[in-house]
Length: 193
Image: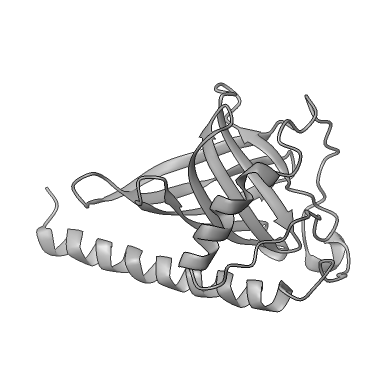
């Protein structure tokens, strides 16, 4: 049985991690806000990145860059301190994360990622019906994806995951349950389109 002090300590650590993640997102956004294109950077081998396997989409991108979610993404970005959201998408160090990601056994549980350099926008939901919006960054030398966001109910979430060479993302989503207690769920999804 977990001691209440441990629960409070875990909740405090989660809030501190979330705040530091939001601060990193703001720093990256401030650096990219005036850029028309993401910064030119050496390819994956220069970053110590594993070589990605070729990606063949199973279907065309049904959301075409996610322009329909731009107002919600800008609203979320403004809540985190900087309303800038890039209108176009572009990969980073030869890796383009933009597209539909879903668990292999549940293709309707979709996450849409928009990438502009190291900056990411994320839209979660079921079959294109958004239930949450986030922003974060991609750290290529660690193959890491870090995202902070809010569900449409106002509940915050944080996702930390690793991109694998076979276009699979695996990690942990941290949020709170209806009673305000920390909640962790595994992330396992593959790029579909």
